[in-house]
Image 1: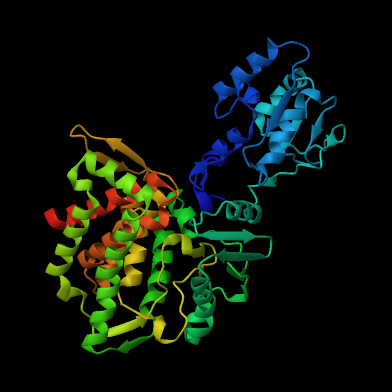
Image 2 (image 1 turned 90 degrees about the horizontal axis):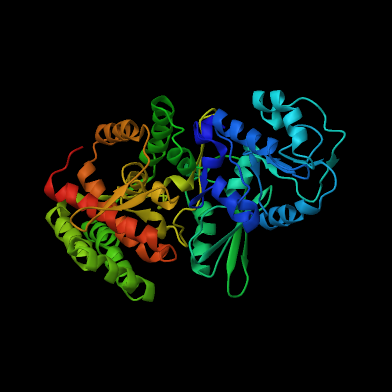
Length: 469
């Protein structure tokens, strides 16, 4: 598990904006939260023993391992509600249980030396005297396959998408039928040499108001999960980023005339952010966020930010000009990159899609911008809810992240980009347009939208007032 989430406790692992401990607490009935004891230190163990020793004879205890994963929170709620009426001890399994109920809490004290020496789920004994409770069998998150299945059940999707999964397949479904068709068709349209990097799509279904397609399930953690939990060291990250940038460098290339190149560039880096900002401001929630941000400081005014971006783009427009186009993935954020450090296995999912071979071609730096907004732009921290927006003295906002060794890893990425001959300032300017463009796509999470606005402003400030990297 260290390869995926670093040294984090199970309860502190974040999936879909909240920690696993928070999910567990939310599933508890209100009365149960008053008696909840979270054990993280010897002091917590001592406090628990004191509470049991002064408790009455009828006091019960339920021990739940932090590595227990409950996909169906309602079943956990029902179980806890029934505990006051349980008449016998029970476990969720015969060996190494993740959940043990003691009808008499004092019997746990009788086993205290074993309890403080090792978690119950590591004990070798068979719990034959305990009844096994079959209706609720949690996943063991210490097992990589079960952890990846569990985390995939909480995969974040945008408000217009739906993701279903079982032990063998992912099914992606959306009301945007054209997009589903394009994502499904992409695999069959790309050249053969790109296909080994992609997960094959199949079984496209037009379901009337929606459309869907399937992919085989690979038990690989996405790079975003590994990145935000600090599981990459310098060696592992170098291997990962070199492999990813090899894919980008090896994309098919074709020469384009000046008119075609200008059209691709303008569509991605001018028209797209303008269109998305207009879309955002046409939404009720978008206008509410806009008014809130504008009242805080004019520097958060979206119209001003867009104008600043377009001015910077215009002053550097010549550096966006290329005489070639590439077949790009189109959405190389870390959440769309599956990676196994031990096997150096990298697979890409959720491309932008294409309905024709002509639609495959895009601007050469666009994929670099997507990678950069995960590495340098902290996109995945925002997407996981791992950020803080703090107030400054001048009534402004400051965006903060729980970085570990990420500055070192960012410098590795920067050196690789420079070695490839790309101007990081141009990539970062295009990256700012990504943060502005994604606002309407995340409208169902206003906090994330504010963070995206702050990040776009931060990038523009760095570029306009002095770039430090």
